[in-house]
Length: 417
Image (cartoon, rainbow, N blue to C red):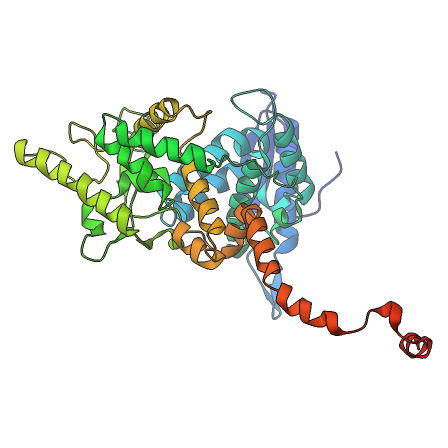
């Protein structure tokens, strides 16, 4: 083993076959043991890198060298609890926790933060893209890889701010392009059949399917909508809560997951105001009258005031409402479609009817119009064709100019010069 410079510590094998690292921090001798020589050497390399980065003098005065050597596992745990948990939604926290526990720790958790390289992360993402799927054979999707990279960018960016590494090495990682998935959009005939099936369904809450076709809510937003957020006077409602099944991180709760309504939607733009069509509003009034009638007969019915509630008055969770949607889809004789197809259908019909992208983006709660255009730009083809057609009269006026073939030779020469 190459001899280390003074102050970089020493590495040797003890009688019990463990590998011992001896080093100094702020003048005090420290010892750390490892089972494998490779792990001990990685630690000493990280320690040497820290020592090299900290100046021994400043303004001619000796300085203490405080070595901070921390593994990816240690830092990601600290970042998740101290920096992410207080600032992100519970669902986002759950995604981060899964990425760290199932992917980062087993693969690169033992690497030291200050010696981590872009190559290390590139190899990690390449491997996860080939064989990182935990449920089936194969790799993680480009979208999941992108989400994980975004999380690491935040975590390592904080590490840079904390002085634990020199730069954010994840910035150089290249990922495969996110393949556009084919969206399921109901055609107009399917849409009419589904509306009829929802009207004939024995469950009154099937009205939510019709409601969603003309508002474009996410499933969690529909299940989390309460009457208190609906203005019957102004025919408008506020999207400000979402109801979803989320993991439990409280050790006192036995269930792994529970359904909760939280007062934060997917993004800041998701908290929005949606106006109702006159006919849709009248149907909503009729639906509310049914709930009010049941509540008069059975005190305590729907105590939390959800717009979509079961016949026993309990709120729907997304998975249960998805089952109701599937029954209506089968009744309508429509090939398989999930609930999100209603949102896609609303967006497509809106563009087909001439709604501008900025307005649609706000109704859908997208962060910016470019997301809407990227997702639903295909629906603008007919609209673009019709818009170009409106220029026909203007072009017809130019037909009075003689065509190129009738111009004089001298004029042609002047043009060419």
